[in-house]
Image 1 (cartoon, rainbow, N blue to C red):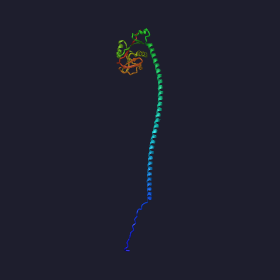
Image 2 (tube, one colour):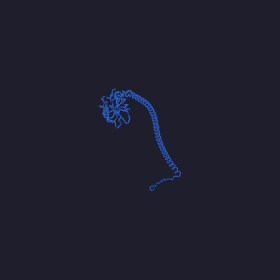
Image 3 (cartoon, helix red, strand yellow):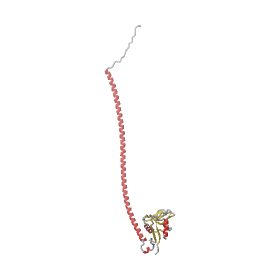
Image 4 (spheres, rainbow, N blue to C red):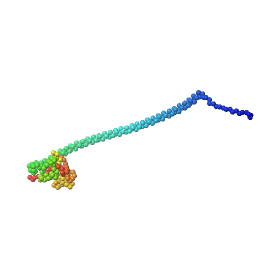
Length: 267
């Protein structure tokens, strides 16, 4: 078989066209797959969106709860403060009423004391210092008032005719007298009652001034009744008397009225 020919068979595979039915099946499967995937994606998005809104709602609800609790606490505190203020106001009113009652009681006591004091001053003047008979009247010169063993001249010098303490003492010397010296409670009451507060007079010089940080009378004796003059003895200060007022320390260079004193004449 030398000359025999070898023949090869060629097999050709051709794509056979699909039928329309087969194409529809394949398309349906792909379409269903896409629809399933799309539905899965949509479901996941909706679930995520729903969770997002749930979180927002929970956050807002929590914030509202916090605000509500704070408002409740604030209202409670305000209510408590109002109650406390009401109680304090009630206590203040009660205290004020008690103070008003005490004030009225003290006012009545003061009025009673003033009445008693005025009666005592009147009694002392009538007992010790009034001109009760011719004998006492003749023991003092005209224009002088008798009290116990002394005679007093009240110089009602109105401003600007007042004198300094030194000038007043010189005036008394010219009348053979000196500024008034007080050694007893009776004389002090008489002197205070004679020092009338009238016509712009702010005080009457008496014979008391500060020397070496001590209150001394013009006759050189010390003030023994410290309760009569409680202001400190400062050099350059002298004392004035005025009715219904305690003795007062003022500068000796001020201008005031004055009271002179001298011994009563023997009868």
